[in-house]
Length: 229
Image (cartoon, rainbow, N blue to C red):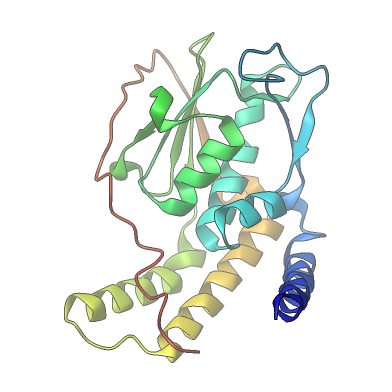
């Protein structure tokens, strides 16, 4: 029995790899970023930086989705600006993000910011934008979508499903299939389009970071987990 389960898991991982391979491998905006950390709980800086890629983030988060891709593309084009060598120092950052599983997970993994250290703040007014600050210098940037036209259909479908849930109507497999197809198209757009065409990155002067927990406790990515296929 255990052998059968393991074989099934291995086969799933192969399928998983193929999925990421097809979507992400050659996408220009999926290039890895360089990060550095400390060697241990009481340790010094690493001797060498390491690469962090979108595939690793998707595995840690649980899936590749439009929210994770949005966060990765926005943060990978902004966080390196705070460091002269382009290496993201995950010991020296604060981030403000919307309370979304995808955005919060990606923020924490890419920047090292954490709620328990009061360096990851939640502000739902940001939507899909982020504010990132280097702690040691106070240098701060805001990154957001300058063009949202490519996610209009996706957001409309999300709103339709949320309305169904609010009215206690059945969310069908077809609803989820359509939503995921629209999300897939949005991901491809963000991964392959010149970021200058759809991102706006603004340097903020004298930004006053304040820790906040906006709407903590809610979670949206498990509501439809039992909808059939």
